[in-house]
Image (cartoon, rainbow, N blue to C red; front, top):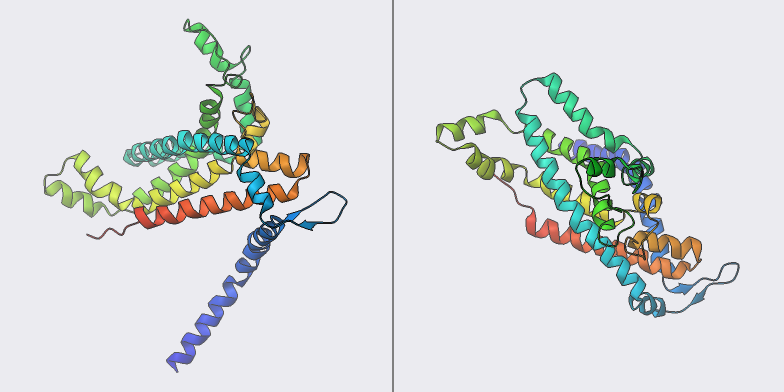
Length: 294
């Protein structure tokens, strides 16, 4: 009787998740399989596809433009991810210490607001802020006696400037995740640590951060994925310039597929992005995920 009940429960659970599985397969698995298959074919617009084996992989993976885009993408990831995670954690810790629920909610909403703005709108806002002549940031610098900067036109400043946009957009989302995790930690843990004579720094290092480890790993993975496949902010502000120093892999993929119509080459890039993100995610889960018990 119990076995029959459990079998019915499992079947019911399967039917509940079936729509989600169907959606996942339609929007992710099917395009992934098509990209993998398409990476072995040279497609001519208006003509027939021709099987070329791994020649497109050899072509793309030996192309200096592709590896320049990879370096640009990795640079944005390195600049954006640690900054976003650390700032979000610090802000969440500060909000968690606010005793007024009204003020905590107000500050949380303020930090979350940029995440609710579309990426193109955020990019246009920052394009005005970075404007070398009329921009708000250069206006502040000029008032402080600092010469105006060409934020999006400089080879050295364009990637940090784009990273700042990504941090601004994602900061509120990560803060919400950390704040929710902090509020889920029982107050008894901190009371016990205080009785044992632990300082605030010791409680943070020995108690809070270990308990936040699953959320930290999740946030880092989400930020890696977002920043590795960033497209909207770059396309709306610099379109890959100046001199290709801000062209990301996804932007190169877009241009290759829809500007030059080399769909096979674009499929190779898509497979590369998927493989890189999969490897990084699995390694991170393998080496940084751990359970904390008290």
